[in-house]
Every structure is written in C-alpha cells, then in structure tokens.
Image (cartoon, rainbow, N blue to C red; front, top):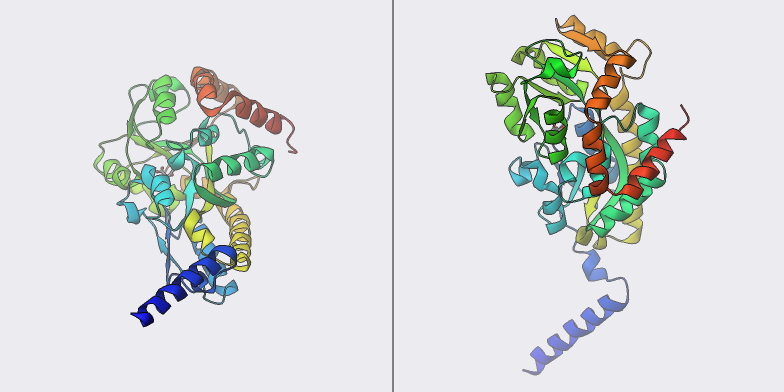
Length: 345
Ligand code: X2X
C-alpha cells in the first residue's frame, strides 16, 4: 500500500515536472515512425517533395524522426478531400498536400483555384512567398495544423480524347473529370462542359474506360502516366489555375518534438519545397518548353492559346471569379490581386 502510494506520488511529481519544464519522458515518446500523406508518389514532383523532406529530416535528426510515405492518400482510402480533417484528427501525422484538396475545409485556399488569377510563375511566387502566403499560413494554423513551407503541383492544363480545345465552344457537353472542390464544377459548367467530381483514384479508370472525355492536371502527370495511352490525344495549355502544395504537421505531433527538432523539420520542409518547385517547373519555364515537345512527340495535339483566345476563357469564367470572391474573402482576393500586379516579372 505504502509502496503504491509512493509510486503514485512519483507519477504525480513527474506529471507536474512535465507541465512546467521540457519533459524528458514526453520527449522519449517519439514514435518509431511518422505517417506522411501524399496524393501522388514519386516519380512525380509532388512525390519527390515528400521524399526529399523525409530524407532530409531523417538525416538531420540522425534518425530520431523517421517518416514513411503514404502516396495515393492511402491512409484515408484515397478520399483526398478528407485529408485535411484526417490531419487535424491525427489519423495522418504530416502531409504535403494540395490547396485544392484542403479547400473544402479551409475556404481561403480556394484563392489559388480562382480562374486566371495567376498569369505566370512570378504571380504564384508573389502570393506564396509574400504577405498572402504568410496570411494563409496563419489561417491554416487557426484551422488546426502546423504549416511549414510551400511546394508546387503546378499549372493545370486541360486534356481530352475528342478534339483540340481552342474556345469554350469546343468544350460544349464534354465530360470532364474535376477534383472534389465545388469551384471546379462552377468553372466547367460556366464553360459549357459537363463536369463530374471524382477522386484521383477514381479518375484513372474513368479515363481508361472512356467514362469521362477529359481531365485537367499538371503536364508532368500526363507524361508520367502516359495519358495518351488512355485516349487523351489533345492538350490545351491555358494556365487557368495552379495549385501550390503545403508542407504541414499535425499539432500534437509537432508539440511532442523538442524545439531543436522542430527547427530541423521546418528547415527541411523549406529546403525540400525550394528543390521541388524547381523540379515541378522543369521543362515548362525554358523558352522552348521541352515538356510540350515531348508530349507532341507522343502523337498528342498540343494547343497553345493566343492571348485573344485565352481572353475568351477569362471572360467566360468571370462570373465564377466574382462569385467566389466572397467565399475566399474580398480582402484576401484584393491583396492577392495587388501582390500579383506588383510582381517582378
Ligand atoms: O486529383 C488531382 O487532380 C490532383 C492529383 O491533382 C490533386 O490531388 C489535386
């Protein structure tokens, strides 16, 4: 009895110590392995972002923090629009996620999906690397995760199996797979297409079977998956939206690490993000755009819009832009527009 009381007393004292100082016992409770969620795995740039981050963390923490990659959002059975909730709940320890997939829970993230907001890469950088990016991180923190760095999925170009798209007229009635975020349904409806929301896991068989005519995603995904082999014979580069990626950690997991390890994980995310953005843009930022040549060489018709042709798409989606302004936040959109207008080209 006395022995038991002593033990209880010891436990209480340890708890009290933990509350007032850095707790050695809590620190010892590092998990043997942390689960990182990704939609796309290596060899895509997105997958590389996760791999580079995990490798840097392992090396710099001398193996104290071990991360396993779960591409295909497999921790939540491929349901990518649930990723943010799962992160908050601790089903997922950390992630490199797309602003699109988290926008159902964090409305402000729809900013990056507003049609034709970001005309070039300098515009993306003006947002993510500037005040808007800092603001967005505060929003994400309030929403319950710890944001650390930006990466990039990229400009989402439209592909289909039917014909070259040069105007909204060409998209009439086309069945296009869109991500599970309502602004995309609004945009494709405004363009006269027939959008169907589905996860990326469901999109691939839908493209292969011809259940849908087209899809929109960064071009590296087209080449990695050889989309021409599932009938995608037409690509139009219209640069209507680009989705940045965000490196985040679950709050409790973050709190369980020492400040020194937190700093290492944060810096590793920043370094991995920088490296990955270069990978994501490779072949698309050079004057002759080698990625487009590679795709054309696979027997695909690549259509690049003239400024006048592009303008028709801008006009056709303007009402969607205006409608979503209030959801995203009028002030946030105005700040983004200002930052883009002031960008260095
Ligand atoms: O589902 C998509 O299209 C993808 C892979 O780009 C995202 O996760 C946003």
